[in-house]
Structure formats: structure tokens, C-alpha cells
Length: 517
Image 1 (cartoon, rainbow, N blue to C red):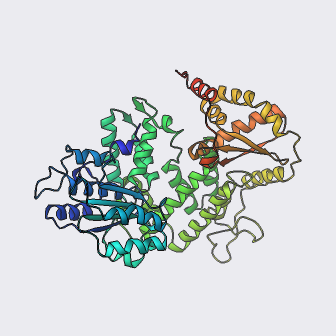
Image 2: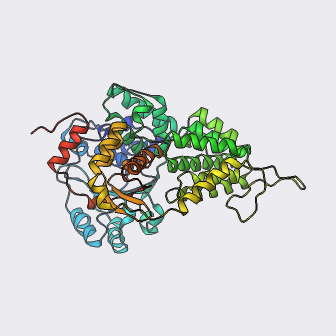
Image 3: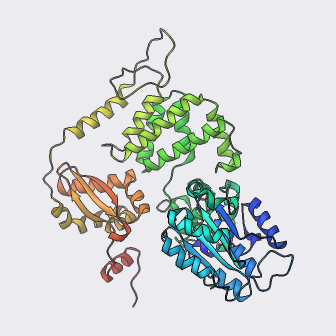
């Protein structure tokens, strides 16, 4: 079964969204028979480089395209075979897995000596070309200098700076740009209409913000959402697949820091923890919004390219006007630091609570404490009294964790009770019980840290959400009468074991189905 972005990959130039400057140039070259023998497409991933390369190959080799036209007919055997990726005269090479000089000689140089079998041109599409070795680049350069007339090269890369200048100078270069919020929204809404499904607009906004201007990523995320196979998909339905942060909470948090409302920031974090928001995601989204604020302050780019709706952009612009560039940079640096600490912190929200106290307070604090002020008081101004309850709560949690005694429970005991644990959890949270069944118990330290391996990053993110972590740890405490904290490691793809029939039956049963055959 093809993924969504493969299913709806544009088959004609008129189907494309974005990259108008490139499409216009290339289609004019096709119409006027002025194509060159080496193209270089560079830009971020997932924005259309390979798609336009295939369209160029299809148009040039289309057997029914008339002079003065640029669109492939999409009906002749050549067009159909290129669309299916099986045409003998269009050779796609992934340079990431064919880096050596021998591969270039065998797959390109030797192959290029022979004329095309069925079409006017033999076309080589080399993806991630920057991954080639120096010797491979030298071999490629020889044929780029004097290519046979029937050969066309289309090189694609996300890292132009890694290509030798000798290669770059022999190509016609095209810089692919990230898609705007409106362009991706148009594309996703078109797909939703064709799939005859209703999707909450907030889900679309969240997908676009997460895709960072990459249309392929946006379509892939939408495909995961549509795989729920519901006629109408709400924000709650999408939560297990698309854990994210409400932009309103992000803006409110930043606003509370800028207005020196430390208590509000701490209360907001407490609410997010209780709602099960992934704090690493929250910190990442904070950094992204503050980056946009910095860009807005410098008037560096057009607002449409920043990946936010017009309404959200106005709110972010308002925030950007409330802080100096110097202090904003300090805030970004501090948030990056605190995000990195979340995973290893004894209390997940503690790094962000420190951030809130440090930047959301207008009082001075002694240097020896972990809480520092970002906004100095006027000269001779008395320092307001700190709110003791919040700080005492944080201190109490740290003391509790640092004074903990070694646990008596062993990993073998956890394994013995594993079915009981997952069944009890599934009664309260079915999806969490299912995800835990897909993990592997790796280690249990005497400090009380239980480590589990997870195969998919999206499952790891869901398991690490505070509400899910809390439910799991409470169940462990109830059974073993000791406090056990959990940690998750992402397993390498090659480490996973094949799913046996019993596992398939268990998985099917979790979803109310059965294995047939």
C-alpha cells in the first residue's frame, strides 16, 4: 500500500504547488528545446526536488508530447513506466548508499556509453549527490565535462556546500525553497477532499507547523492521521499520532515570562503536565516561536514563509515587540539548554520551571542558586519577596529523589508480572497498554530506573508523555511497593526481532480483530 505522498505525487507540472520560479524556467526550456545536460537541484528535504526531476524526465521522453508543449501526456507507455519507476532509460540512484567510485563507474559511466533503449534521452537522477566520495566525484566530473548528447544528469542534494565547485559549475542550478503555510494548507485540503474525510482545521495547522515547510513531511503526517480510518477526525482522535502543543499555551507561556508573571508560567506548566503534554515537544515549539520572533525583529523574511497562520503570526509579532533582541537571544539559548535537560531531569518539568523562575521573575536572586534573574531591578529597588510555595515544592521533590534508597525489586520480577501490569494499565488506557506490549524490558537499576526499548520514535514520544508515564509508574509502585521510574530507549531498526504469529494475534486482539489465514 502506497503512502499518501506517493499516492498524490504530482504527475504533471500543472499539479505542482510551490517552486513556481523553477517550474516556469524548466517548462520554458522544454517548450523551446533548450534543456541542458546537467541540472543541480538543491534545498531542504521533502520540497519537490525528486518530483520535478521525474517530471522533467517524463516530459523529455514522452512519445506523444507535441512541439511547443511541456506537459507529458501521462498516457503513453513511457509516461506510465516513468511514473511507476520502472523505465529502463530513467535511472534513479541514491548516492547515500552508492558512495564509492566503483558504483559511479558501473551504474553511470559504463551505462552512459550506450544509447537509450526506448526514448530520446537516457536520464540519470542522482539523489543526495553530496554523499559521493571524492574519487566518485572525480569520476563523475569526467563524464559531466563531455557528456554524450543522449545523456542528461539531474543531481539533487540537501547540502550544496559539500559538492565540489567543479561539479557545481557544470550544472544549471535551481534553489528549491520551503513551502509556505498557505501552500501546504491548500495541498492538504485538496487531499482531504479527495479522500472524502473531515479533518479538524487545528489538526491541519498542527501538521503544517510540524512539517517545517516540507510538503512531503506534511503529507506523510496527514497519511498517518487518515490511517485512523474515521469519517471525521477530531483533535482528540489525532493525539496519539500527532502529539503536540497548543500554540495558545506556547504564546501564553512566553507572554508570562515577558510580563514577569512567574506564578502564571509555573501554573501553566503544572496544567500542561496534568494534561499529559510532551514537555520536550513543548520546549521545541517554544524555541521555534522564539526563533520566529527573532526573525520578525530583524525583518529578515516574508511572513508567509514562516509556517504560521496569519492570526498566529500577528500574536507572535506582538510578542516580538515586547522584548529586546539581546534578551530574546538569551532566552532562546536558555530554552535550548533546558530542553536538553528534560530527558535526564529527576522531574520532567523541573528544567522548564527553572526557566520560568529565571526569566519570569523581576527579582534579583543570589548567584549560588539555580534561579537567576533576566531582568535587573532599578537601582536601590527593594527585591520583592519570592513566592515560597512553588520553590518549596521544587526543593521538596529534589530532596525526595536524592535521598532515595536502593530498591529490592529485580528485572526478573518485573518480567514475571509484566502481563498483569499491561492488563491493568490497558483497563485505564487501552492505547498505553498496547504500546507497552510492543516494548522490551532492558534493565532495572538499583536506583529504581527501569529502562525499556521502543522500536518507533512516535511510540516513544507517546510513552514519555507525563500522563502516560505517571500511570505506568503508579502501577509499578502498586505492585512492587517501591518507587520505580521509567526511561525509554529508541531501538535501532536492525535490532528488532520479527513478529511471530502469537504476537500478531495479540496485536489484532488489542484492536478487536483477529488474524485470518
